[in-house]
Image (cartoon, helix red, strand yellow):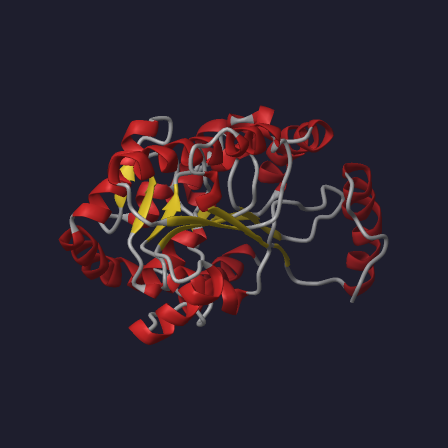
Length: 315
């Protein structure tokens, strides 16, 4: 069923969840409601399983548009207490929900994300074809995600400048993702870069294209300030691509010992990790071996089973 109205604004979110959805629930009387993206209806007593991906809006309110952030901060605690059960995508987010909202740990199940099957290693010929298509055959580092401040792209650009200066290598930086919000500083930093001609913005791409680019990269750069999970880390693992990621929030949990972990506020640390992968190929090989083990924790099959188990506890 598709229930109107389309809800693309906080006011419409409220109308949809508190007026439109309850009418349908009263009519059909479901046994359980699964809400997969952080919202639920406070106007129904149908047992609800609420999926919470992260509480970034609590930690970094400045990175969320005003009215949206106010909605999240006002309603998410109410949703968390109203839900019969909660599923979080990482242990980090579970702990966050417990500490910030006072939710008992017994009410929260951890259900990791999975990744699409298109993410897999490519042979050298296929990788070369990808590089010829997108970077004029040059090796490159890749970032996948939206373009907004929480993703730490300003420091990523500054670190890439330092990496190019230190190594004089031919590498490009490929940025895959659409513009989000508050990206003025990101564009200003890009325009001030010494090596901005080596940064390629590819915008939004289909999953098959992204998978090919990730599998053909020297490394995945995922040095966000805060993440509830960080799916691109696992996608890179599946492609056999080394990962540089942050030591904050959920990212060390997802990466385990299979990535180079850096302080995302330190341009020097991010640069040093890039240089390490470039100058020491054995580091990349060791990371790839550990990634194949860490990857076993994540699949949509495991996600489905754990989410089903959580639903059975909700009814």
